[in-house]
Image (cartoon, rainbow, N blue to C red; front, side, top):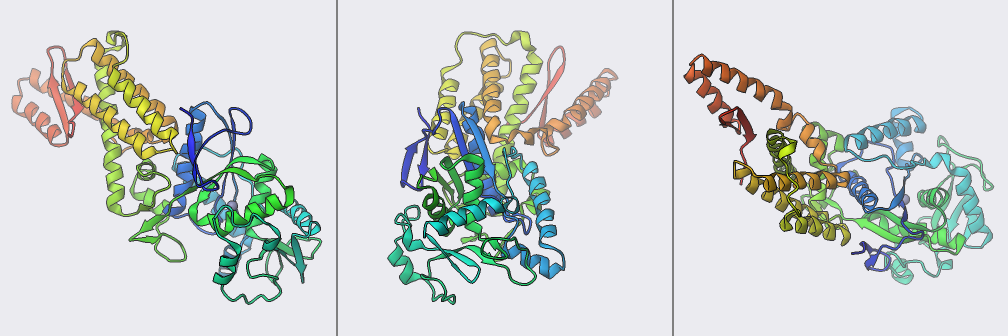
Length: 477
Ligand SMILES: [Zn+2]
């Protein structure tokens, strides 16, 4: 089955047919580096990271670019408040961004272009727009004349007339229309600036993405992605600028993820109802945050609460526990006993294919995880049998392999190696089993039983076999 994704531009699920066979160019709007990013901001970082890795898993060669907006009103405001330079603020939060995404298990983009390093390209693009009569200069500011781009509104589905009547009364009467937006802003005192044909100034936000996307990936790219709050005006304006200048399609597929809500409202810095990803990661393993996002379809709104995060943690714990128990069972049996007894059981094969079908259908990670939980259930059924035969062991090894394979893009199994997981406890449990064995040899039955009972209370069950004692985490149904 081909991969289909919901394309905001066509308003339907389109089959993903890249410009060049097997190659995908993808641009994701990155952060404005003026603060630590909040959990809502983390959603596009995580879901597009997983999607990009899924494309790689499905055999595409992906070129992935995420920009950093390092010149912006918010950065300048913060710099002035703290009495430091704008570039100091930008540098500090750029570093914090890299630290946080690394913790979140996000694979590095091929490029992280910074706006301030692409200014000459922006000036060049604005010059083209001015020469073509699509942009106009007023007192050192340059505005894009929306009325000159006939396709304006094609992404957001908004129409110019409605937008005009809905627009607030603009203070800036120098603009021909309230919808016209700034490509270049004249420098105010105390602001960072660059020399340009229109005097000292700095670029508008939208032009940054047009230029960085085109210079790193080409005039037409496959996928442009971001949060759904960016559809209008940011992405609409990116299209107007880029296509106005080149006359070519800017991006062929537009992907937008849903909001993260907190008590029904969008989580945002301006509303003040946010938690930074950093804060949450102090309390929960980063894989839990990934799981929290991946449990929902990326386009659905997602409600944030500690309860939901804990649910994600439990879901992850279920997978992680099953994986540990599979490993223990396979270790115990020894590699030689895992017979390749014919075909993989049909149920497992079916569940794996089902997960891939879900992912191919607009990257439905929620659906794919449902199949993974079914695999986990299969594993637990086998594990519950106790004495395992060759086919059972083979099936277990294949379930483990499938989940590990999917982790190439889900990125959640790092949890299994964490302190929160019992894998780290394994050497201690082995030690207690050894102590208990010695106690039994010394006929200290009461103490030996106490160790067994206490471990059971912690969810660890010991099984005395003729040759040795094994353990596993008790399976929760
Ligand atoms: Zn952007």
